[in-house]
Length: 386
Image (cartoon, rainbow, N blue to C red; front, top):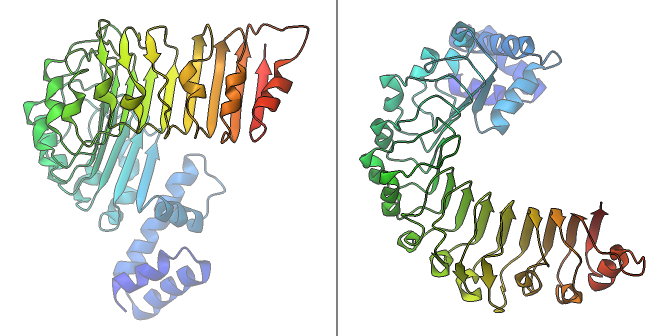
């Protein structure tokens, strides 16, 4: 029986099939599969030594398969401990390395030529070895919280890359001009760790990534591109966290392709937005922002399904909330607000409301919850006022 057939039985993660695969291999003297099986026993020991004491071989294989033939390695200081993964080179499609003290990528992964996903979180990686750039089948690459602030130009060798994260690396960021060569890129997450937000002169290069659907920026000065987003015709999701935005004006027409918009810790000032600008928007999240400068006209936001407002002081609930007739979920968390309007009754399709507010004004000792239940009869309401 071929090695691949035996592996297929083994990877079924079914106890009888796994037992059958090793019995067949031993009866046939199939040493390559016996070695493969013994390697998995070493992998099991690795995870058990990391705290998964009740982990079984079936658990180990099931997790590998559920993660899309991917392995997770965390909290490791000695790269030699990873030798047990070496025989997975032909089967493994993804690796995640997290919370390690490694200053470079472990050599054990050099032979993992089929990798489609490589994720590195909170490591000490300062140098990327040349062999890594030979993994040209990569479609997902994530470097987050590692001490590298210059994005290697060699990243552009990954022509099949669809998702790239290079965020929370250091206090600055340098992008290679060759980033424009990543024309298959659909998701891009860029940023640094702390204020002040640096102005990255190369940031405008991302406007040449015409297939980009998801853009997330953290602690960056985006004033040079904020009114040029229309150059990204495929853009559907925009997330801005702690970004510096030119306070003079953000042209709402730049948001017309968006289905999801998330803004955290950004100053919103003189944003000229109409309902038509947000006509495709389905999800809106605003967190810890001064939104006094956010004025949206009374055009109905017919596609808006989810609104989240968190950690803000409001004079009243923004009128665009009630002007969203198809809104299904409303989240108001740690909001300071004097009260609510009967206009909420227009949200006839709302099915869930999570409302946690403070400084509500109580009139005639009447609780707000009965009012909300009256206005939103079709919604399940989780309400807390403090």
